[in-house]
Amino acid sequence: VSNFKDSNELKALASKIIMALGKPWVISTHEFYISTSIGIAIFPEHGKTYNILLKNADTAMHNAKSKGKSCYEVFDFRMHKNILEYIDMEKSIRYAIKNQEFILYYQPQIDLKSGKVIGLEALIRWIHPKKGMIPPNKFIPIAEKTGLIREIGKWVIYEACRQNKEWIEKGYKPIKISINLSAIQLKQKNLIDDIKNIIEETGVDSNYIEFEITENAAIEDLEKTIGILKELKQMNFRIALDDFGTGYSSLNYLKMLPIDYIKLDKFFISNVTIDSKEQAITKFLIKLAKEMAIKIIAEGIETNDQYDYLKKHDCDIGQGYLFGRPISANEIEEILKKTK
Image 1 (tube, rainbow, N blue to C red):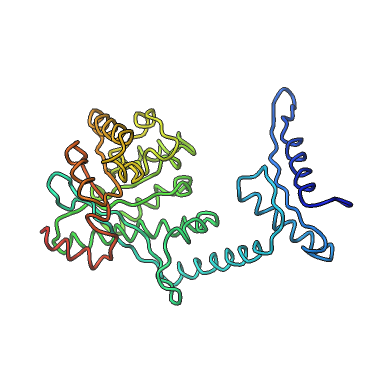
Image 2 (image 1 turned 60 degrees about the horizontal axis):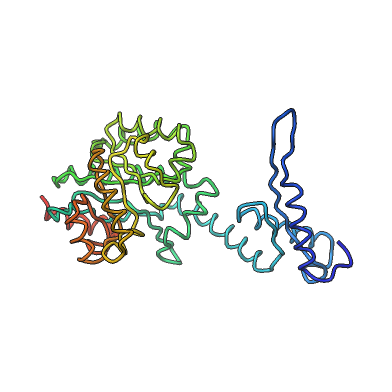
């Protein structure tokens, strides 16, 4: 595009192209839709040669695609920095898998009536040799985009099962460990076979293992998810629906999915003692779960008032900083010694 006044003119043109290509294409009575992602590079500030301009426009286009497609982006030199950081992180994750830099932390789950620890949620942590502890929100999204989450997820299942079996062999009272399954793991063809092999190898009792899936992950391919969960149930695993109320919530899913637990998101719990709407939703879900023989786990409990309120309204299980932050296996073992 030549002889344009400013970047706003280019943005307007990009919007027109997206709208034009977004109209349905009818082929043999079938309608097809095309999504369009556009990257814009401007001479001379974004490059003085054709190749550099094209490369930078391509970078901007991929940035547009990452934001959901059907949009445009004007090149910014910070995009190069982001790409380099992304590439470096992907490489570091591969090294972390190879060099066993991941560990599991465990957060206690409490029976709200007795106050006793009845479960643990396994949460992955990355101890980088130079950068120290890297939180999951920094590397899990990249692991999911690159597919590395499959290998990481398999390791998490194995390590949680191995650790649980070790604690039982030491004579500690058997305790349930919950493990998160991502949407990408649910799409794996060999997920069930991998889990069967891990159970056989570690010798853990599947009654003491629970798998958590989010609402959004469950409905990406609902029919397949239901099939996988039914197989897991037949193997005596427990199933929890995580982050309930934050995704595409539908009470219909509670009927369709073979689940044992609903995990109420901390979004509800944080204001449950002061917000009448969140109180009403929480009480309704607890009552509904009781009638469907599903147990409720409340996440993000941080105050005694929240604890007292949920206990008063018959919530089954609590998890949150009030009871303990995620801690190492050695620290958890000290807790288990007291529950013998």
